[in-house]
Length: 109
View 1 (tube, one colour):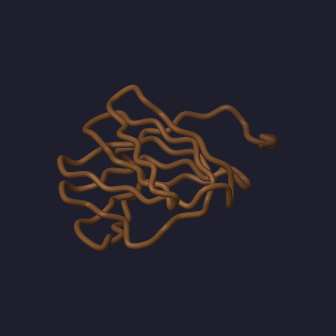
View 2 (view 1 turned 180 degrees about the vertical axis):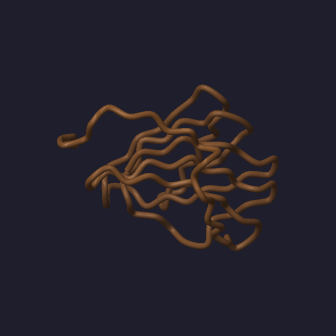
View 3 (view 1 turned 135 degrees about the vertical axis):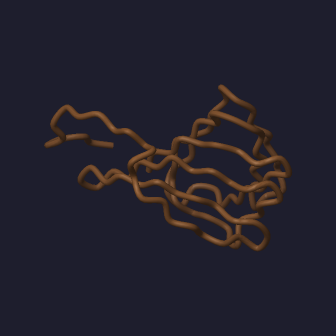
């Protein structure tokens, strides 16, 4: 990832307008900022959330609160708790997320 032409700035995530994205079950609320080609999000999955699709986008994801399960298309399963992160490249390994309790995430892609 090349980061250029981004002046220093701060973000108060509570001031970013949320958008709601429905899952197969539950929903996900995103607060999104774009810095050139880089998308940065504060994401909150509701309890009972299950993604509505397999994702092939690359991410760096940090779990801030709650617990989230990420399933890979090959059957592997990973559980993230606060302070844990994962990283995956674009089109590397399809994945989808779910949570029974809800989760708050910080995502860069």
